[in-house]
Length: 182
Image 1: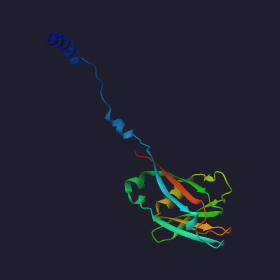
Image 2: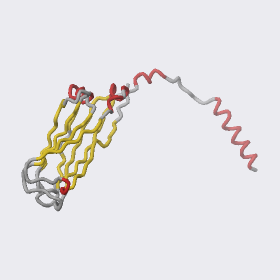
Image 3: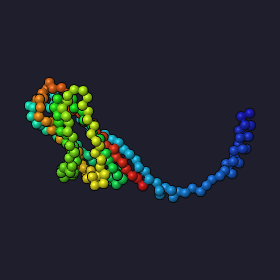
Image 4: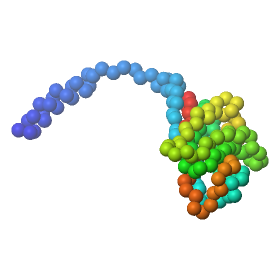
């Protein structure tokens, strides 16, 4: 019975395959193809407990720089049209801070400094979401010269911090890259 059913279906389908309609395909449409992918990635993160920021209540600074070699890839670099940096800082320490994000070139020169004031913790939630830093056109060209990103943290004057101090300073940041592939 199965063979008989298969034979009947085959007699109907095989002629349809040979007499089916088709149209000419236009492979030149590929020339008009434009892709605009968007990539999101973590940029930097740190969480510094207050008891690691021991000071006498005066103004002090800390500094760290990280390699940032994403622009070495020519494919990525040539198709990049825009980058957005998103920064979020949470402060649960009874001191205010100033965070300076620095874009550093291959000659160890600071090309741009982006300041982020951080108010002292006064209770409750103290998460600050800063407006996105948008890099397009000339500013994007400057960013493409960046080989390191520096973080300078300036502790403003206030109550002394010691090994018993509570709270922390947290930074979360991300980058969104917009490409155009034609």
